[in-house]
Image (cartoon, rainbow, N blue to C red; front, side, top):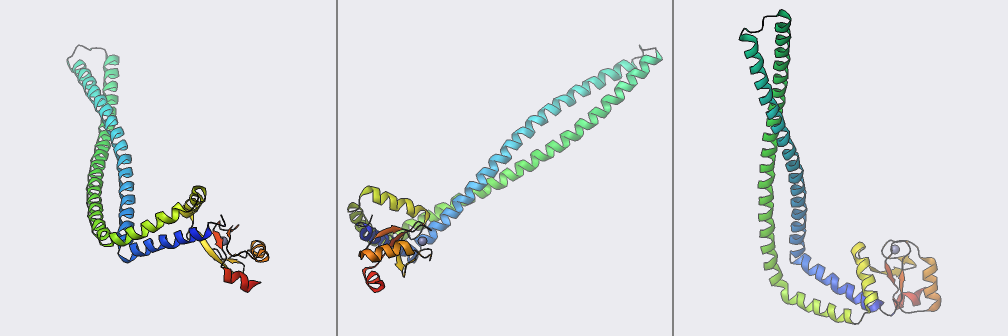
Length: 246
Ligand SMILES: [Zn+2]
């Protein structure tokens, strides 16, 4: 690592230049807006899926209840026909039929009630789905507009970016791939990856690094790539800094 620290530092400075350029030209801002809208879009589609699954369940429950209601209505009709056609003479049988009819009517009312609630739920789910769908279309349109804006802004900084990217590519060629991978891996999690050490303190997390630092000082090495035990950053010790600490 230590022989590559200067190159990695160069790489970090160039990447910072790109970041600054993107910030100044408004590219970063547009990119952030796109990312935030994408996340919003994702949340909406997730919610839509959730409602849709619920909607499907409610619909199938509605169909079941509807068929139960049809069955009850047929049973009531049969029962009433039987009761009023006059063929049943026995009082006990008449009472029993009347009792059955009452029970069927209560069940019918309960089922109608359930159906009403299910129908209402279906209506609400439909409305929510429609509203979320509209919102998602709107967000998609906004993302597209921002993408167009990004193209225009990128066009304006194209040459400058190309220049820096070329320099980055050149630096990368001079760094072994395993070192570069290590740097890129760290870059995903911490920023900046390479920091200077001032007075034995990590420039990233401000923790004292006495042992590592004294090692560097005692060896009088000009530049080294130590990893901070606390934050995992690569610590860079300036030659002047080493001398002044001796
Ligand atoms: Zn640190």
